[in-house]
Image (cartoon, rainbow, N blue to C red):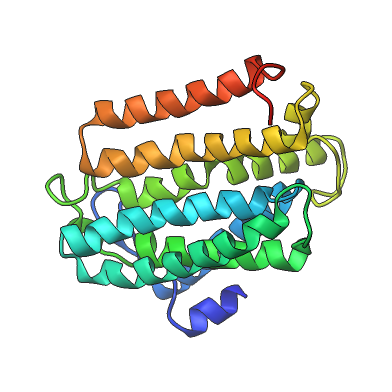
Length: 248
């Protein structure tokens, strides 16, 4: 699947490290394949509850869309137009599927569906952050030059965190990194006595808690982003603390 992206020219071209570093073609292709493989597996790993992967990908796509739309429309960065279109398509796919996939699910996505969403969201991230010239993103029209590097990791923080924790946990136990277990983030949250629906919504909120402030910080004062993240985190804590009073 990563090879298909490379065939159509979707690859990481530069990184904002020590200024703007244009990558050799082979290095860019290697990083692209690695990034796509990690994201695909991260989305597949997080697909452990009804609607979880679908909703998380939709939130991630909406965050990428907001950032690319603001760059393309508000700030006139033409090369951000393609990512806007890709992410809009991903949002539409997830929005149409989620009502049938949320608990109790009528349709199950399976590994192939989760991996396809992982491919789409990784392609969205690469077309936005790996192909839009980071030097064009200044303090006046899109925030700090490091944003193209930080944005995908912040928006995809929850799936990537769950993926890294799973790999480390299984390797330390002498098992295959891809052996199934019941120690994912959603399993741990459910052991607190939360329902599947509540756990899913909490992970939606945590995804938004990392994604939304990053996008907001690119175009508004940092305190606005901090306030947004704090409010979202507070709502998730309320869902845990008042699990008897707030019925979900």
